[in-house]
Every structure is written in C-alpha cells, then in structure tokens.
Amino acid sequence: MDKREHLVCTALSLFYRHGIHAVGINRVLEESGVAKKTLYHHFESKEALVMAALEHRDEIYLEWFGERLARVPAGSRGVAELFRALDDWFNGRVEKLSPFNGCFFINASAEYSDRQHPIHRACAAHKGRVAALVRPQVDALGLSPRRAQAICETLLLLKEGATVKAHVQGDLDAARRAGRTAGLLIDAVSGE
Image (tube, rainbow, N blue to C red; front, top):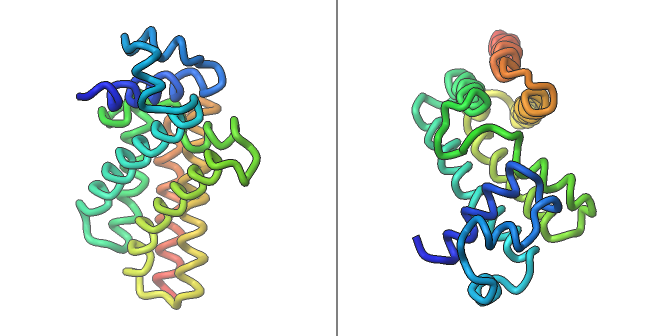
C-alpha cells in the first residue's frame, strides 16, 4: 500500500468512526504515521482527503454490494439477498466494510448539508449508484416501468430506513424486518 492509499484508508477509518469534523488532519497524520508534507503532496486540503475517502468507500461498498446481489438470480431472490447483505453488514459479518457505524455517505452528507457542496453531491451520487444496482433486481420481476420504478424507490427507502434504524437506535434486526416487508411487497405485486 502506497502512502496516498494509506492516508485515505486511515482517514476513512477515522472519519467513519468519529465523524469528519471531529477528526483533524493532525489525528490522521498521527494514526497514519505519515508526514504533513506527504499528506499535502497528495491532498491540497482536508476536503480533498474527505473526497478521496468517499471515493474509496464508494468503490469498496459497491464492489461488495454488487457481488452480493450477483450471488443469486435477479428478481425476488435478489431483493431478499439485498436485505441479507445488509443484515450481515449491520451485524459485523462483512470484514471489508469494517465494524458497522451507519452509512458513511449519510453521515458525511449530514456534516456537509449544503446540497451544492461537492461532498454532499458525492454522497448523493453514491446513492444513485446503489439504486442502479438494485434496479435490475426489480426489473427482473417483469413489472411495468412505472410500477418497477415505484417498487425500486420503496426498496431503497426500506434499505435506507433499516440502515438508519440500525445505526441510530442500535436495532441490528432492522434489515431482517425490512426484508420481510420487502418480501410481502414483492409477493403482492407479483400476484397481480
């Protein structure tokens, strides 16, 4: 691992556990063992480091999530896998995502609440990429485009709600309950 990647991984770990504004550059330097000059050689500002951490987390998360959804055929089984994957993440069974501390993108967007801020926009873009992974699961159900869009949006709401409930309230069964609700929804629309 080169120094840039080491800085990004260290920053991501610290930002994810403690919050972006709560972690100063000196803490990142101390934890990483990298000199300040090296950090500023790679990143012009703390916000540039935050963006790199977001990009790294985006890559890790989408790779993991995509692999999980690819394990089963698209459709109702893919929807069920989505919530099984979340349950594994919430309950510490996904090593590459580290211990669960909520969604890094929700957390970061809360700290950079101006929707025009590049960090907030990067968080929104991540959510769009997640939606793009979920949509084929719904498309495989054979619904009308309008109905498929509504179901996809509902599944994403269930996913995000379960994530927040697990993080904020410590409800580590939230993904399982959301998955059962998603299953009822899929059964209802598939029976029409």
